[in-house]
Length: 160
Image (cartoon, rainbow, N blue to C red; front, side, top):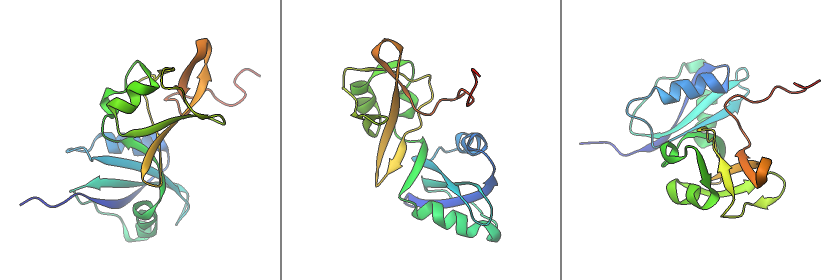
């Protein structure tokens, strides 16, 4: 008898998004949905919400952070249906067809045109907002888009 998937919160004290991402990617079986959440209790760190049948232990001192993650209406999706199919260059329409992302928005400009090419960099981290996944992108050379969050972001003031 298998138990049903449910949203659970986990807080292991990850200090960075990369640490939390690595932990999520190591899970077997992979969760259906996994989001990271920046929390401040009892100290600033990254908590995780998972849609899974598995259970994970959270230290009592981090229980409030785990609860905040499991009840959060926003997050940063690391695992979601179709994520493995979002590699290379894809049109906005292909992203929507291949994954559970509901829409692609251009930062500060609204919905992206369905025919616009997105250079995924093989790293797509949509925002989970009110029950749907939204990929925020920024303009790139040649009328293309890139996801707002990059695997290796350019440090602030890198060219100064």
